[in-house]
Length: 305
Image (tube, rainbow, N blue to C red; front, side):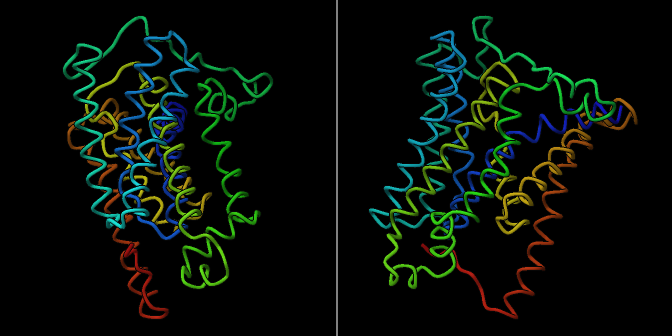
């Protein structure tokens, strides 16, 4: 039972990790990207539509990535070029994403609500040689689909990218002292645009995993506010990649518990479904207390662009 819950937590955490890694790029650059859900839902639709039409998982994943990056470019255009407030743009992009996917679901795939088909290719489970035979660890680490491993391998890569490269240093300088970065000759708008595109790329992977890896279908609002939960993970971990991913796994574990516990305890499923949201609220309360304390000591960090 415990191993089943842990295995499910790893799977459930995957889209949260992708979205959180994408969101922390813009967080580090000083931008509050609240459109992660919008990026993800468009990517989920593009991925399953492309995979269904082409019969190829690779084409589906690439379509999801491109769709996420297109939405990110649109958001960057309005925020960085036309100087629209990023919070307002984020809301507009999210609403546009939900409306656009509902429209395309009806007009392109002829469905209203849910699209599923036997023609949609599925990711095979990967049994890792030798690792699968290791007690306890093997059953947890082996048997997942490709995008699960990509998500967990991306964590150290993103950490290295942000904290061991010149580009990562520029991103952090832009986020912490934009005026100083501009005075030092750093192309602030270009760096922010790049981080927004990366945000779209990772959310594209999150969306592709949701519709092709986690399940093999598309449904309206199937991301279930995972983008907002990813934002909570980013704030809780202050944008540190490894810590952010760890918090995302914690949220995934809470969701896995909400699914599995009704079978064991007999409690009402509707009650236990509240567990992930209660964990999210608890995390935000802790963030709020910690931020208030830090602001009293060091001043506030404002997302005002």
